[in-house]
Length: 172
Image 1 (cartoon, rainbow, N blue to C red):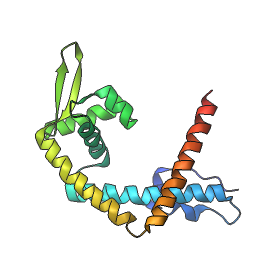
Image 2 (image 1 turned 180 degrees about the horizontal axis):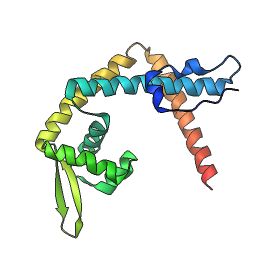
Image 3 (image 1 turned 180 degrees about the vertical axis):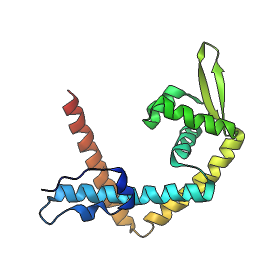
Image 4 (image 1 turned 60 degrees about the horizontal axis):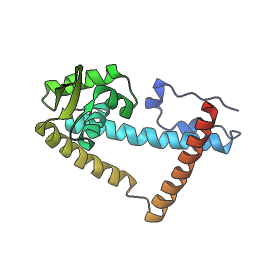
């Protein structure tokens, strides 16, 4: 059996599936195929965001979270939703605030807290990025038949539910 790890050099080797040997089990091969697909798609999105909008995927993700909650969110809420540390959120928010894309509004009942929300400029900027992002994803998946897309969606939903159930059982 081949032991594989996900390391920082994976970005230079996008086809992780090629690391599997002929004697590796099908579950490992499936895992590597999923990981390869995720890395390829994420790499393309990151590259396009950088070249077309001079931004990063974490900035895009933070703005997407804020668009869904127009009244804004506390840093801790953003951190929880994005599954990153408060420090990461603070750094991204500082940059976006300097560019006039988000604003901090102090919470009257808690002077230590601020609500972060998109500015009108931020909403316009994000809309352009989100429209392009949607087109990129449509293009990337456009070669799949409707049947294949639905079958893949359903199969991944089944895998997600199974993984969540097993992980929750392991936590107990």
